[in-house]
Image 1 (cartoon, rainbow, N blue to C red):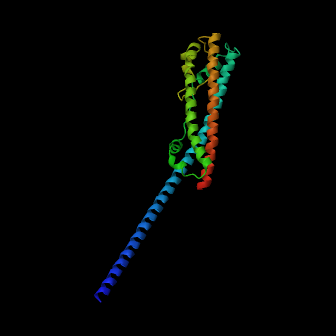
Image 2: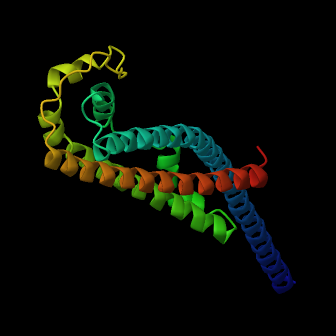
Image 3: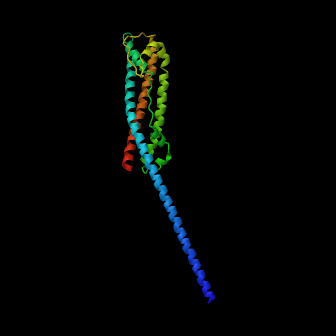
Length: 244
């Protein structure tokens, strides 16, 4: 009788331990599941926030690029006008135009991407969440494009710096200063200011650097346009995929 009671108690203890183990296992599993669900929810929320921020940054970039391209096209025409005046030997009697375009040639043009775009493109988190490999590749190309644009703009600046030895010999610094307004804008002179030099060789050398600068303007403009096409495609994809 004692032996049977002992066996029964032992059986009940084993059953209780098994039941407690099952309950503990269920609790641990549920905890892991809830933690994973919470982490996924947090990740999705973070993803949406970054996607929205990227889209806003790229939209701002599209507007900035359009304005920058218009400015570059205008600057190209201005530099080209200066080149034509010199190559067609329109010097005396055209001093107003020469001074005006000469003064404008020192103004470099700079494009800077929106901070949101630059910051998010550097994060590996976001690109890894996209299903489309095309979009992943495009985002990588966007980052590379920004780097190429920055390098191309630096080369533009370097060419502009090369103008100064010629400008100081051809134009009067005093007259140059008169063309700059308080708001930074450039006005065209009306008094036919004198040229310090009209040496043909010097002017021809100046034309060489002007033409090289024109090429760089075109190269940077092309890079900006390619960036714009890619950025516009990303924005359309994000709006469609995340519905905002």
